[in-house]
Length: 130
Image 1 (cartoon, rainbow, N blue to C red):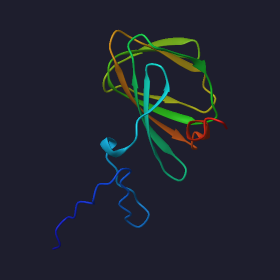
Image 2 (image 1 turned 30 degrees about the horizontal axis):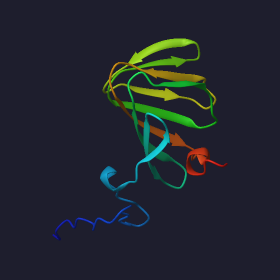
Image 3 (image 1 turned 180 degrees about the horizontal axis):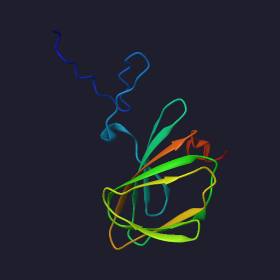
Image 4 (image 1 turned 45 degrees about the vertical axis):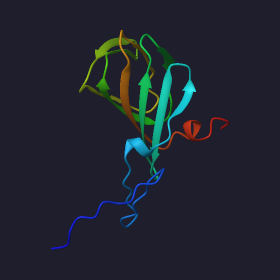
Protein backbone atom coordinates (compact mmCIF):
# COMPACT_ATOMS: atom_id res chain seq x y z
CA UNK A 1 0.00 0.00 0.00
CA UNK A 2 1.43 3.40 -0.94
CA UNK A 3 1.71 6.26 1.52
CA UNK A 4 -0.67 9.22 1.29
CA UNK A 5 1.12 12.20 -0.21
CA UNK A 6 0.40 15.72 0.93
CA UNK A 7 0.43 18.20 -1.97
CA UNK A 8 2.95 21.04 -1.93
CA UNK A 9 1.52 24.38 -0.79
CA UNK A 10 2.05 27.49 -2.88
CA UNK A 11 -0.26 30.51 -2.96
CA UNK A 12 -3.41 29.15 -4.63
CA UNK A 13 -2.42 25.50 -4.20
CA UNK A 14 -3.98 23.30 -6.84
CA UNK A 15 -3.18 19.61 -6.49
CA UNK A 16 -4.62 18.16 -9.68
CA UNK A 17 -6.04 14.69 -9.19
CA UNK A 18 -7.71 13.77 -12.48
CA UNK A 19 -9.14 17.29 -12.64
CA UNK A 20 -9.94 17.48 -8.92
CA UNK A 21 -8.51 20.31 -6.83
CA UNK A 22 -7.29 20.44 -3.24
CA UNK A 23 -6.99 23.81 -1.51
CA UNK A 24 -6.75 25.16 2.01
CA UNK A 25 -8.53 28.39 2.95
CA UNK A 26 -5.23 29.73 4.33
CA UNK A 27 -3.79 29.76 0.78
CA UNK A 28 -6.71 31.58 -0.88
CA UNK A 29 -6.37 35.37 -1.24
CA UNK A 30 -8.68 37.54 0.85
CA UNK A 31 -10.64 40.23 -1.00
CA UNK A 32 -12.44 43.20 0.52
CA UNK A 33 -15.41 43.84 -1.82
CA UNK A 34 -16.89 46.42 0.60
CA UNK A 35 -16.19 47.85 4.03
CA UNK A 36 -16.73 45.24 6.73
CA UNK A 37 -16.66 42.30 4.29
CA UNK A 38 -13.86 39.81 3.59
CA UNK A 39 -14.33 37.24 0.83
CA UNK A 40 -12.35 34.21 -0.33
CA UNK A 41 -13.38 32.23 -3.42
CA UNK A 42 -12.63 28.74 -4.69
CA UNK A 43 -13.96 28.31 -8.22
CA UNK A 44 -14.79 25.11 -10.10
CA UNK A 45 -16.19 24.65 -13.58
CA UNK A 46 -19.90 25.14 -12.75
CA UNK A 47 -19.98 26.02 -9.06
CA UNK A 48 -18.06 28.05 -6.51
CA UNK A 49 -17.65 28.22 -2.76
CA UNK A 50 -16.99 31.46 -0.90
CA UNK A 51 -15.99 32.12 2.68
CA UNK A 52 -17.20 35.47 3.99
CA UNK A 53 -16.40 37.37 7.17
CA UNK A 54 -18.92 40.09 7.98
CA UNK A 55 -18.49 42.82 10.59
CA UNK A 56 -21.10 43.01 13.36
CA UNK A 57 -24.34 44.79 12.39
CA UNK A 58 -23.43 44.87 8.69
CA UNK A 59 -26.46 44.82 6.38
CA UNK A 60 -26.64 43.10 3.01
CA UNK A 61 -29.67 44.61 1.25
CA UNK A 62 -32.42 42.39 -0.09
CA UNK A 63 -31.60 41.14 -3.57
CA UNK A 64 -32.17 38.23 -5.94
CA UNK A 65 -29.92 36.53 -8.47
CA UNK A 66 -30.28 33.68 -10.96
CA UNK A 67 -27.78 31.56 -9.01
CA UNK A 68 -28.87 28.80 -6.67
CA UNK A 69 -27.22 29.38 -3.27
CA UNK A 70 -26.60 27.38 -0.12
CA UNK A 71 -25.26 29.09 3.00
CA UNK A 72 -23.69 27.54 6.08
CA UNK A 73 -23.27 29.70 9.18
CA UNK A 74 -19.88 28.86 10.69
CA UNK A 75 -19.93 31.43 13.49
CA UNK A 76 -21.99 34.39 14.63
CA UNK A 77 -25.71 35.01 14.22
CA UNK A 78 -27.57 36.48 11.24
CA UNK A 79 -31.06 37.85 10.82
CA UNK A 80 -32.07 36.71 7.33
CA UNK A 81 -34.96 38.18 5.35
CA UNK A 82 -36.20 35.57 2.87
CA UNK A 83 -39.16 36.31 0.59
CA UNK A 84 -40.68 38.57 3.26
CA UNK A 85 -40.03 36.20 6.20
CA UNK A 86 -37.49 36.80 8.96
CA UNK A 87 -35.25 33.98 10.22
CA UNK A 88 -32.43 33.98 12.76
CA UNK A 89 -29.57 31.62 11.87
CA UNK A 90 -26.55 30.63 13.96
CA UNK A 91 -23.58 28.26 13.87
CA UNK A 92 -24.38 25.00 12.09
CA UNK A 93 -27.51 26.32 10.37
CA UNK A 94 -27.75 25.77 6.61
CA UNK A 95 -30.01 27.72 4.27
CA UNK A 96 -31.00 27.15 0.64
CA UNK A 97 -31.95 30.01 -1.67
CA UNK A 98 -33.44 28.87 -4.98
CA UNK A 99 -32.73 30.83 -8.13
CA UNK A 100 -34.31 34.33 -8.01
CA UNK A 101 -35.29 34.04 -4.31
CA UNK A 102 -35.38 37.52 -2.72
CA UNK A 103 -33.12 37.56 0.35
CA UNK A 104 -31.02 39.85 2.51
CA UNK A 105 -29.38 39.77 5.92
CA UNK A 106 -28.32 41.76 8.95
CA UNK A 107 -25.39 40.52 10.99
CA UNK A 108 -26.09 40.50 14.69
CA UNK A 109 -23.79 41.59 17.54
CA UNK A 110 -20.70 39.58 16.56
CA UNK A 111 -18.55 38.87 13.51
CA UNK A 112 -20.18 36.35 11.18
CA UNK A 113 -18.34 33.70 9.18
CA UNK A 114 -20.47 32.28 6.39
CA UNK A 115 -19.76 29.69 3.69
CA UNK A 116 -21.78 30.25 0.49
CA UNK A 117 -21.97 27.82 -2.42
CA UNK A 118 -23.27 29.09 -5.76
CA UNK A 119 -24.16 27.49 -9.07
CA UNK A 120 -23.69 28.59 -11.78
CA UNK A 121 -20.60 30.73 -11.14
CA UNK A 122 -21.13 34.27 -9.83
CA UNK A 123 -19.54 36.13 -12.73
CA UNK A 124 -20.19 39.39 -10.85
CA UNK A 125 -17.84 38.15 -8.09
CA UNK A 126 -15.20 37.00 -10.59
CA UNK A 127 -15.29 40.20 -12.66
CA UNK A 128 -16.75 43.16 -10.74
CA UNK A 129 -16.97 45.09 -14.06
CA UNK A 130 -19.34 42.45 -15.51
